[in-house]
Image (cartoon, rainbow over all chains, first blue to last red):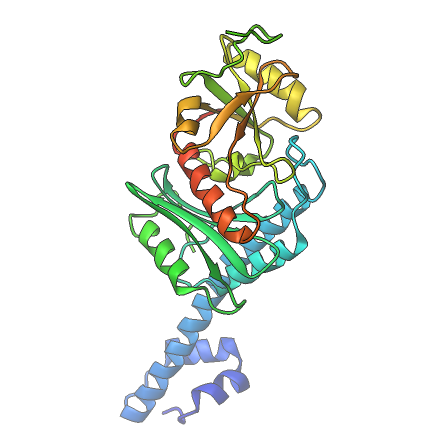
Length: 182
Length: 137
């Protein structure tokens, strides 16, 4: 019967592969061993989920940087637009990293004033759009059938403002056929 | 009514189709033309559009390539009626040259709270985008 190990120490000491093997292959029967096995399984599951999530977020951030590069010169739209603001790119990346895993990732577009638009588009009558500019105050607007509105919320760089989370969830809860999976 | 050098009437009628040329593929997705495509230029507070008049879609593509895109790719055209602009309390006014050119004017621009004004502009852009038809080659 395997010796009980602390999950935290175990993950650090044994390494991910070893812990995964422990979690998946363990046939322990004592209650203590079962508890350890369950805890290790939880750690492994979370690590895998984080890895999958990171992959999607990394892809989104990569798209964001490509957009910033594409729209980094004045007049990128043929209508005398301002180049994308590097601070806006930084804040948009920070925003994407801070998004809860339950929220689909947005699509990006450059705006003529150099801000970045983060859009969750369910249909042409159901969408949520945030502008990330050069400071922490985020302008956003939404349309949900007959319901529409706009507001500003402060993003501290760490936690997405609850009103924005609620707004996005309200839009994406209608189904997510047109939204990128998180 | 006064006539412009393009032959179009000076006054833009509600039923006229307006074209916004899209030089970024990010300006639309499979569902719709995205609101960012309609936001005004910050330097003059206006959104540049072209009046379709009696021109074919093919002729519009040519106008877009020559007048806006230049060396860039013209990825699409957003077509919408002037009445959809006026329904949100904005206006469309002709401004030639170049021929057929017009501007969407009246966007909120109070500088005391720039982010709130931006939010208002986004809300209006969403409502225009809601009615826009996307043309792609």
